[in-house]
Length: 351
Image (cartoon, rainbow, N blue to C red; front, side):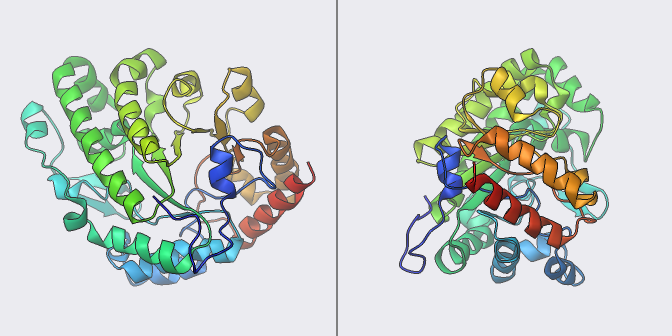
């Protein structure tokens, strides 16, 4: 578990941790999904020389990039720079990240034999560079929490089955409905992998975890409840048993908010389609994260300011973490993120 106070950082900013636990905070904490990279000049310079995977295998370089948004924007958390498919290669998946495409799998899952062949993750042997990065960050660089993360079983499985990104999830749903035995075996293996993966992140210093349930909006609530909720609960309950809060987040998944509300998570991340007030009206009493529409970051400041203030006011400094409704994209000016962070901090203090 991450240290909230160390000799190096006597004034540790734990605002985000307290907000995740539902507490009222002095100001609304802020971080941005994909705050590392995309539009940062420091990142773009590094990317001229190295690929994403090459960067993540260099702990000092990865730590530098992970810490940079905290220094540049004054956000209340750092998020580890890596991809959700990082733990797949060690268990036997031939994966690469193609520029402009995303994760591409060269040996997709087709049947139960493919699932049975999957190996087990040995985190400190297979992914030692990740844990070295975390230790550098939490012991030497950060005075804010480090967010660790994993991909949710459905999202990771969709890449493994489809062979890459998809808009319709046809092969994934075909396997889920046609081959329930295969599906549940795959879910078991991915859940075990995720728990092992997150355990090592937490033991190395991560103090909050986000589960990226990115593509789960493709499923109805009843299907999610039957085929995914038990596995999400296993992961979340294990992380929380270590005293670490858990955030769940997905895109286009407003219909799943009531189901997420039944899970053993601390925070529900909202995209821009559902307001904080609407989530509360659904009966959600857990902490909420979100949810400025990313496209607004390209609009006039007056528009950004008005919407951000509306979100912050709805959050009311109680169990609310300010974020975007999805990730930062390349066209966003870094100064806009810095200005937005300052606005949220300043405006929320007056509520």
